[in-house]
Length: 90
Length: 90
Image (cartoon, rainbow over all chains, first blue to last red; front, top):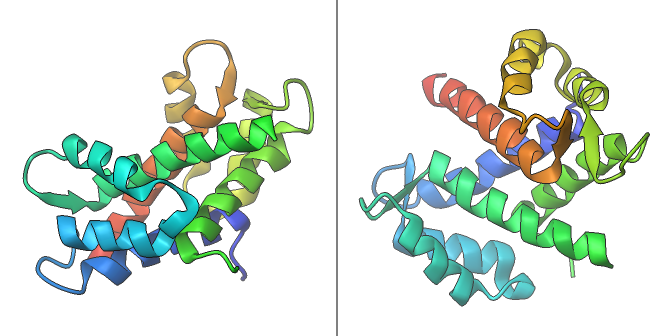
C-alpha cells in the first residue's frame, strides 16, 4: 500500500532528522553542530540560515541538544509558516 | 535545482493543506469537515483518526476553522512525535 502525501512528508521529516542525528553522539538528538549542518544542507540558500539558526538556538531547552520534538516545532513550524506566507503572497 | 528532502517534505505539507482548503469557503483555512476528510484520506487507518480528530477539535481557537499554523502544529507535531516514538521502539 503506497503512502499518502502526508505520510510521505512525515517519513521524509523523520529521515532527515535521523540522517543527521545518527552521525555522532546520541542518535536521538542533534548537536548544535549537526543541527547547523542540517539547516545548511537541507535549506542552504533557501533561507537566511544564519539568522534563522541564531534565532532557533535561543529556543533550545538549554541542554545544547535538539531532540525530535524541538526539531519538529522549530524547523517545520517556523519554516512552513514563513514559506506559506510567501506562497500566499505570490 | 532539485529540492532537498526537507524542502520536499515542506512542499508536500503545503500541498496537502491546500488540496483540502481550496475545496470550499476560505481557501486559507480548513473547515472541520475538510479537516476530518484530510485526516481520513491522508492517514486513514494509520492512526485511530476518530480519537485523534476529537482530541484535535478541542485544540482549535474556537473559530471552527483550521488555519495553516494550526494544521502544522496539530497534524505534523502530534503525528510526528507519536510515529517517531513508534519507530524508536521498533
